[in-house]
Amino acid sequence: MSLSYPTKSIPAITVSIPVFNAAATIEYAVLSVLKQSFQDWELLILNDGSTDASMAICKRFNDPRIRIIDDGVNRGLVERLNSLPSMAKGKYLARMDADDIMHPERLAKQFAYLEANTSIDVVDCGIYIIDHQNRVTGKRKTEWGAFDEADLLRNCLFTHPAVMGRIDWFVNHKYDNNFYRAEDYELWLRAFKTSNYGRITEPLLFYREGNVSVPNYTNSMKAVRRIFRTYGPKLLSPTQLKVELFKSLLKEYLYRIFGALSLQRVLAANRNQCIKAPEAVLMQAIIDEFDGFTKV
Image (cartoon, rainbow, N blue to C red; front, side, top):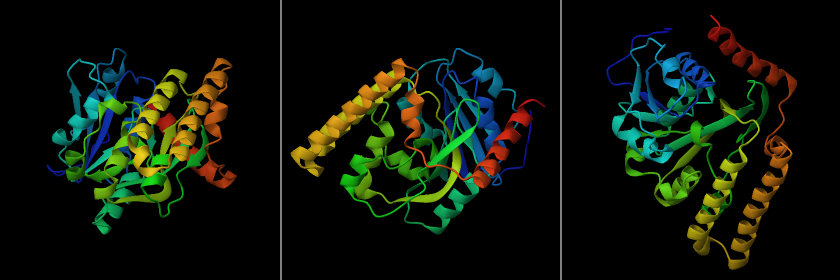
């Protein structure tokens, strides 16, 4: 399968997709990169020891801008993320997960933003939420305002697969495996004092969120509590810290309870903003184009 365009030897953007057993969704992710309006990119696919058909699907794409790194080993997400900057050829590094889909204008708009705002190190964007049937169900992260370090501690700033940043920033700011499942949350917080962040409030990524895995959510909340115990004493009062730790425990137990009833999607949906019908129809049409292309 090919949608080839000529590209320079040094691309403007490296798009990175770590992959582990994503055969059900990886084709959509790769296609959404190929169909970007901005075409000066390379796509770096890092296989993390997948045992399904993920790599067979990726190898069907015939485009010289796609590089597949497949060493047959499961090293874990954090190690893969930390290896990316040294492999990337682009001026900017764009994150993406193997189960998400880019809006066709994502790369163009984030590239233009970083080119125009030279003091910004990392920018994300608003996101649309899609379920496992590729249905658009909501949106999130469509606001931006002043915030301080304590605000960042209470609320993870970025949607991880929606970020694009300067390659040098990623070279100098590594993820910490001690905070696996919340490694991005900890990184944004740790780098806050020496970095400048931005957001395009327009949703430019379709973020897949179905029936959230309760074990994964539980591990995420454990990592979040480690973040609060590490950074909280300097940023929050003792009472505020206890409240935040309690809220984390409460969220975890609610997901356990709702998960036992297979209703955890109800809790996840509460984080989303509703979409008005015209916007929902327009975005669903973009998604449906990918469904049609995969069947050609």
